[in-house]
Length: 412
Image 1: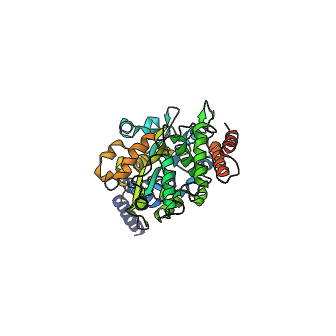
Image 2 (image 1 turned 90 degrees about the vertical axis):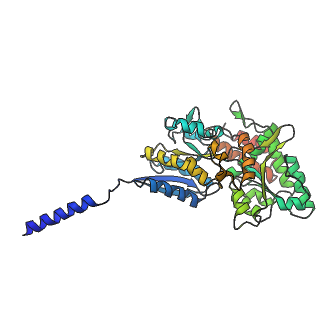
Image 3 (image 1 turned 60 degrees about the horizontal axis):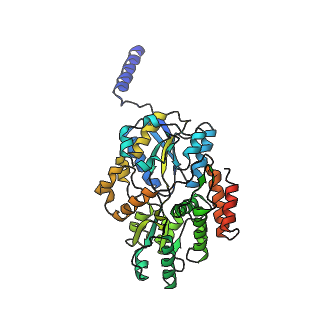
């Protein structure tokens, strides 16, 4: 009797197992992103949810850190022998990451369609020494945003085309009592300040390095810092700019407290159409200005890529995830926060509708993107320059002496 019951139970169990839904062997990926600018945390989660629905056998754990923590988190995780499978990286890091074996060379995984379809300038984000260390994901530069209503009240017909014109227009706005400090910048002692400085270096035709040695303490590099100091001391620049990051600049601008601001693409739709913005419908955008006789526009390469770490145990699944996140379909769906890396996207009305002004500025700005120096010692160089900018702004050293000291402390 017991044998018969046992057989019956066993048979029922086998039938139940056979009719149960197929169980996937789940792979878990750990991915590191930043919690500021470009795509929001909610958008990255939504993109990832679409991926996991299409790939139920892959789970993705997302971690978000401020931009300032992205580099160190990636490097420290490598040292611990585990951590992340997919990491977001800045255009300034492939040289260091290649030298220290942080990212996998994915050149063989990149298809002909990817090579042909992605904008040529975007590949500079992930390439170093003839190899590709990921896929470009965020294609970005800084633009000059302006408050159309304030310019109109000041009698200014068109936004500035040169940095000197920006100073002149800011002075008109200040003198007419429209705003006490018309310009906002991201000049905190962080990478944000280097991006603003690089934009000006590109305008003045400067160089960071010559024959591998610092060259920013003279010529256009010196002119760029002098402009920053003059703007700060003139009272036209918001004095809190020396502590601002990009989100601070966005908040000040969308509260109507700045006539001009230098910032990334994401600010356009957030300030021009955001529910919390006091300047919705009044936001103008143009490429960052140039310098008479030297440049028409100026721009910094602020792009970022997604790569696979050398410690990842699941490189194939990690690449599958990266392909999804950087695909034209995904990028087009979120084009109001970050412009796509795909050239044909700019002919798609779904991408351009409602942000024609932003697209027009991007066509000029993205073509003029100037790189921050490509060197495995970038972190040391950036830290030295950040300190030099602060010292010059605070009048602790002249621009000449501050940059000379930065050159000596750059590690190059």
